[in-house]
Length: 310
Length: 260
Image 1 (cartoon, rainbow over the protein chains, first blue to last red):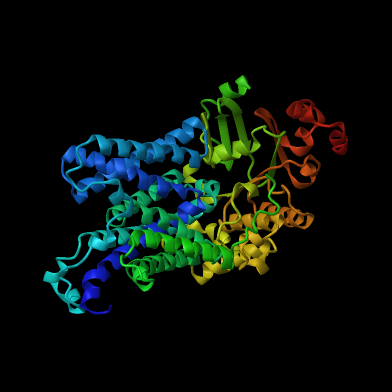
Image 2: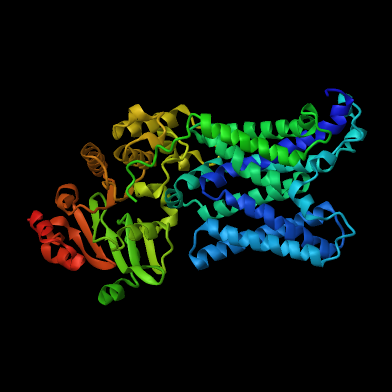
């Protein structure tokens, strides 16, 4: 599988899968430590009403309007979660659950009521994405990677995901210290004069950007899994945040590569005819890695619970 | 109270006082936790903030630092708005306010105290590490630098928090219940560090719950029960009648006797 066929058929989806997985796993580390891991789930669900809304407004199925619609929906959802949490005085998890279920259901109704049957817009697409179809017809072997004309034929999801990952990485690097500080000790961070509220909102916005960019290429399933599974597995491998981030990037990458290969070739090896969904397999692999870390990880016991009075 | 407010209303903030609070009111769910409190903390001494549970002691500190938003009131440090003076103020939150399962080592937490020097991207250099280790040494925790914070005892965690505050190199130290739930050795270590700070001319303000140690540890006392009760030197203000006023009927006779 290392020849022309690989470059044309497998390299682009694998790279897109890796970029999407890592872009979601990076903010996922902080969301996990802030007990906000569900927000990735929430954002991925509200993407559906967002893209349907964008279609209803523009009348076309195009990447940019849909991503903008999804982004607007994600921000509306974040605002609603905050409003319900503050006004209702309830825990964030419950607020997220209420908001994303309602908005997702509204998205399904909207989709049924609108005349979208003629175009390729459906719930399955939003959930599973379309990773296998992101092929590079101009990729005629490794040499094409140096051929500008051929590179122009790359699926647009690839550069879009690469830019998203670069942006997420850059922001994580620049705001590393305030993020770490305000995640560990919000009161102390405020006493230093750090804009804790803006940092938290910025983190959620970056997560939303990663989720919206990724869902279009790889679907919500991967997004939801990558926000939680690689960071959670990484947490059980180490007691240092820096190392945890590295582990989460490694786990996300392994999930994307292994998941894609297993989905494409696994069933054949087992004697079945058809490949299975790459998105589903990637998410499954990340879940298996999490299970492995939960059983064998060196830092999986909560030792910090001792001696705390309420 | 009303007289104090009226007299203070037009006055400029005291440039000598490291922390001056005027007319501070904080409410939780519409119930006042701190009501119209004035406080002027003296420089170079150790002041205990004392009052019953739920009297607004921690809230007073948090609101002064902007950690919780007050309904009204002004806070100044050395006569200037507190936001301009944050570099000179160190804060030790309650130990139970953070999740000690966070993936960090002791030294990582102490280095957080140097955020103002390090900023967003400056590299941690040898001098930063040496300063951090020095702070750990002062609280007797230099052997624990590489330890995960969750593996420490409560007293050790409290000392790490104090080391982080020392790393800030501040002139005013605000501590929220620094002796809560710590072992005797830690209590001794902490009080000796605080007295050392006072010797260097720094100001210490601590929320304190153990009435029996107030006269030993502190120079001045600030009594609060939602409103300000009294403030002044321990021998003048830390009296049975003031305490009775602050605690109402809640102060047991045994506790009163222990105070002599």
